[in-house]
Length: 160
Image (tube, rainbow, N blue to C red):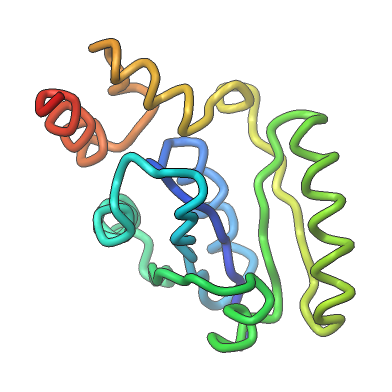
């Protein structure tokens, strides 16, 4: 069984993330969406909330599981027996960062391969941080995120 891990903070999960996840489901038997704790990034949503939103957003994809992790990426991949890391690339700046991370991950565990899925043009500009900023200013993010995420963002910023 080929299992791939798609890691990220997913704060929040966007349509761009879902595009990568959906396309990955066609390449492997199982996709694990790994929601990184990432406390240094000071996420808007708690880890449990990000997991729940990702589960809801991927519910229609039968070979997807969502799990949280708070350790080295290659260690988590080993724990869940993933042979492949899949990363989405939007722009050349993503490539430079991911190239470095891939080289480091390879040094830590040579048994795990990294594959990249290029974003289609409609998602090349999209990031979780942009979505959070638009939502914080009460802008409409409905076209950028699944409906469950849009509702969660509205509720989160209504509290502020």
